[in-house]
Image 1 (spheres, rainbow, N blue to C red):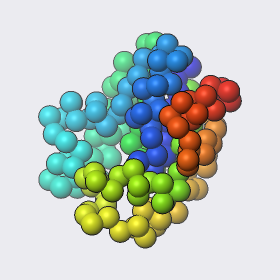
Image 2: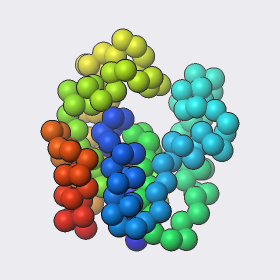
Image 3: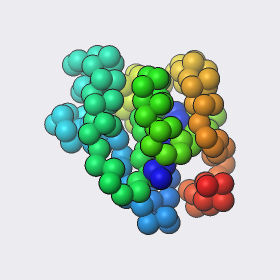
Image 4: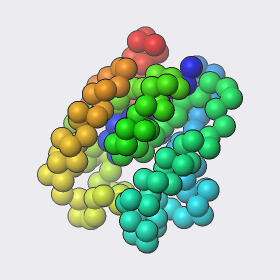
Length: 163
């Protein structure tokens, strides 16, 4: 059984995924890192040079090409579950977990980072708008884990307790 971590940018998918995979002795895959490696470009470069539509296609294609012959924790990009084909693939392949974070928590985590959908200076309202658009999609997850004010260890413990 694979575990797919979904949620907004800055919700902790990569950090939680690394820790969770160690605890479960699963392979860890960061889908964004896989896309960057396969394409020889950063996510930001792909967005700026080719647009979001092209990036979403690369994201779907890269996911399908993953070597999932052993149990894995996969940290997806925040927009990965937007496409129904990706949601169906994740559900068919394992458990989907939404790492739910508030806009305030997200802003605090990403304020110094470059994010393609959030040009600097980051507008807190924009985070809320993106999140509100995605909530109906994220809610389709098998598990919802609230992450605000929790340490990495606490989030991982909550996930393991609900698997």
